[in-house]
Image (cartoon, rainbow, N blue to C red; front, side, top):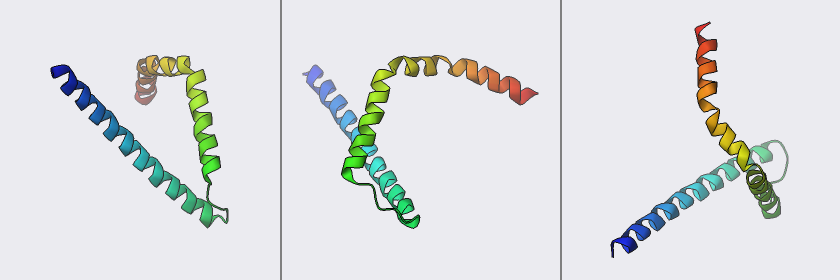
Length: 87
């Protein structure tokens, strides 16, 4: 019983996070289309968006080591920034 409640809560949390991300992405896409319209270009079409998302996904799947190195380099970057700031 407890296991089902915990799994249900995790599923609900994951669903709400995904929904929030989708709504933010839609808002950003609309803002980008408005900017394209101001510059005289047409809006992005579904095929272009799916191609862009596919490329982003391929990039992350091919470079998972880069993500790990990014997070491990944060303390070094913070120390370097503090050194530069103190000069």
